[in-house]
Length: 146
Image 1 (cartoon, helix red, strand yellow):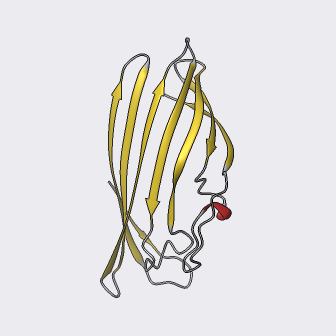
Image 2 (cartoon, rainbow, N blue to C red):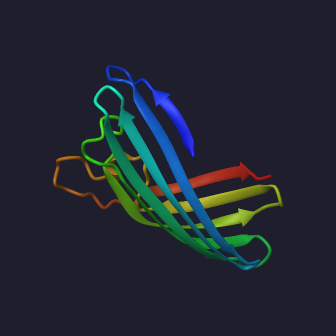
């Protein structure tokens, strides 16, 4: 759980609490990962509270010593009346990718996403009534693990 007090430009102060629950079933050649998140925004001046929920589920199988292709489904829904997360509404869709376990401490990942959060053309715009289904593109990442 994470708590913070935010003061966005030209807006009232917001108290934000981020709660997550993570569950994993892992074998040497198979893994099933799940995570749930709730972002709770409260405006102390009005006492209004907004809960924004999301989750992902991912299944993967290891091939050889390094390659682990996976399928992942993501969902995140921001309430239309949330005053802080105004740029987002609902985002959901599948992802496919391959994670390469280069060493015990380094991972390389390529992912193709149908719900890439950083690209505005892939999210449902508030009040537009239209939902765009555009492939989000390729994401590459090199990360260290401890």
